[in-house]
Length: 256
Image 1 (cartoon, rainbow, N blue to C red):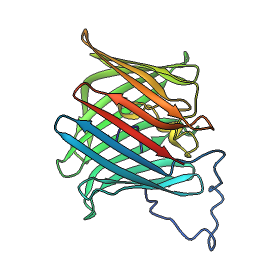
Image 2 (image 1 turned 30 degrees about the vertical axis):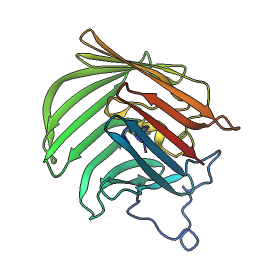
Image 3 (image 1 turned 45 degrees about the vertical axis):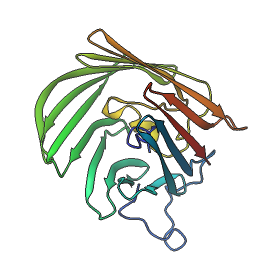
Image 4 (image 1 turned 90 degrees about the horizontal axis):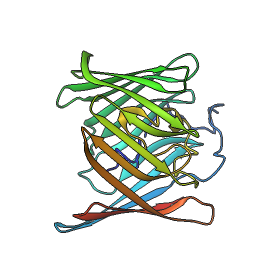
């Protein structure tokens, strides 16, 4: 769930390979956030098979997200690398340092994401998406598969990302269409530097500036719908989000 949150659940939601003491070596790209930054998320699952709680703590350098560390040893933690003001790598690592998943982000000269690569080193599997920005504001997506080193085999997944009022309204591929609606409140990740650039990577979004209210998946005529319910703090950021999945309920509490 954490991988979805920090994309995203959400998801979401990193350790720069070149972090230095900012008081000794000031980094001009590090600036204070313009609004609230998410500091902690508590995920609670209540279901027929039992309950579970995972607390994730977020660390920053200015408005750059450094890491998201869980309090459960079996969960992989999240670390980020920036190149300038752009997120160039996200790794999910277990407590022993082994890599569960590595995401790489490549941009063009205008800071638009043009390539996303996700690899599983242990399974030696890799997936790649390339993006072409169209004159009508949509983004065309081509997907490739391969191993953890090279992804050159074109898959059947060719898709389109459509935006409405600055948010991702639909993501489609050859057999799936996902449609989103949003509230008009603040997304928990909106002030994290670079998150808006990668919000559509890996055929998923948790929103850019606002929060997803409904998510509808249509796969070859089979439709699944998800509804997200929020409470908000006095500054219009989510305090909690609740998702009922039938067999269980996910609740996330946010702290800034």
